[in-house]
Image (cartoon, rainbow, N blue to C red; front, top):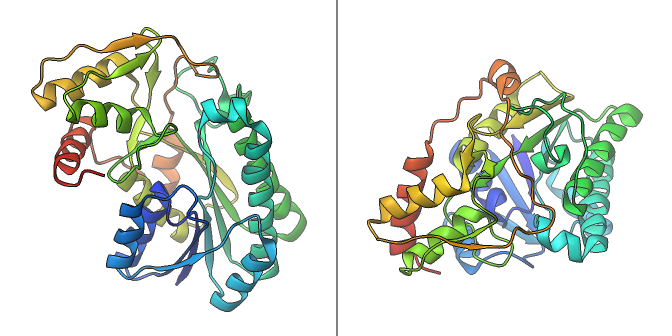
Length: 312
């Protein structure tokens, strides 16, 4: 089976490419490389994953690529992903996340793709009014990033209604794992691991009592592979661990496993941040046979070991 992954040199995209390739899928990655790390690109080359440098905003290039490769499934992971950055640059987020999704869906439809898998975000829910957050929760994003991902969902659904393109939408919670490139927009775990590995205390924005739902990237890859095979299509699924963890608890786990005596530094809460969030994953468990396998402690141990042996 042929699978095309947009954003295939990104954090989730490259892990997905490696995972699916190891299972025998014919994988092609498309990425503009604007925010890809050298380590990720080297890893794709080392495992001989096909990578074409192109931008989802360039619909003509995307059409040429897809018409030549003829994928059975398209997995759209390409996106700008920072809540904080989206507050400063909303136009870029709507342009890339909405228009980029529209281009990818249009080209997929024109090239008779059998299934379109769209990676959305828990940010579409905004501040939860009920926990855990189910797929039926009201959608009220509080950042341009969250709204851009929600508009992307609506584009995907529209093309199903108009042209019958089968889809699955995955609303991912906080995904972490190796080779998540450190930059100002990295996830909190990546930032904490980087500081602690240097003997520095983690920096917490706010009082640290805010909660998140952390899911390892390999668990995400497993459920995406289930999505490729399932017939329970044209559905939205939450993907997380189903368990809340406070930022204070996260910092303490990382410090404890590192064996260092550190105390977190607290700074002002950032605009657009959601206070509490964790997923109701019962729908994915029922229909996608989803079962998170990697605990947060196992994941942290892996990351600290990886950071010590693969600094970048």
